[in-house]
Length: 390
Image (tube, rainbow, N blue to C red):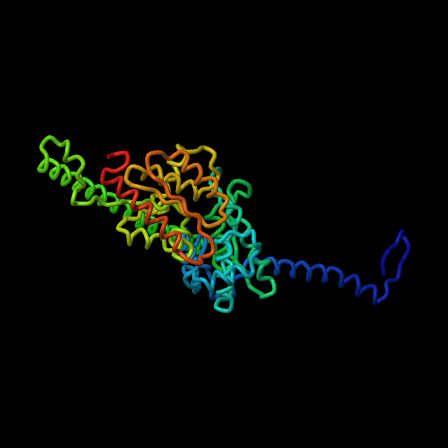
């Protein structure tokens, strides 16, 4: 019974059950919503094997990524080294407008299908003002998801976008760790260990290069001293002797300026490093200069350059300019950031010969070999006193 405007109203058994059922249904829906929210926070907890494509920013942050997932207790599966089969597979599923590096990335993703539970594809927009990444890195999860939509490929991602989303790298990785079922404290410990491992790897590479630069400078001084001695012995006046080439040849140092995925992937760079070294050159890598110093130095070159990786490369050029005999710029076609940055380097960096190379799908290296051989010959001739010094 119930009162309705002062009158007695009779409620049937069916209506009574409906009234009781309404709050129960609402409670069930609320519980289901809460459970879904909780599940979404740990939607990666069932992933045991995580795949990482050996391409693009793997060559810059691979240690960070690998260590982080290993700290979470997961098995990391890194795709095999690049080759023509991997590239061809990526090219078949790519649109024509994709750059060589993006096509190769998709080939690496495809090679991981079936060998892992999910593939890690981060979305990297920027690490602050004037520290952005090429737009392909921001759109990479969408590109991969749409390309492999019919395969059922599972993608794990995160977003680093400090300027618009206020999403920094540390917070992004901690949130990702929680999605794998870790507590916030454990996720933070995993990120700290991963960050420290990446920093150690970067320091090891930078210090090794600094030792190489010091060794090159020392050998140059020794060669110069030997050459001066030979000139004095042949002609005390130094006039005729100045035209002699010293028997002790000075080392030839070449700075390779290229994105890490170009510089350290022989398939992409067409074996440029092997070619240079086979001709007796010592190769320095622009991406292995101390990143903090290079980034800081880059602002002396340009206040407005928007890409952080290109900034690090440009800063390295200015830091190592005095220690090298020539600069080789290598870009994967058609890289938009490089098309602007490399042109600026060629226009603004004076006093050193520069060879600019653009690599596309690898079909042969004969033309590459010819250009590099000519470049080395020119540098050797200048080093021995030819052209401007003759």
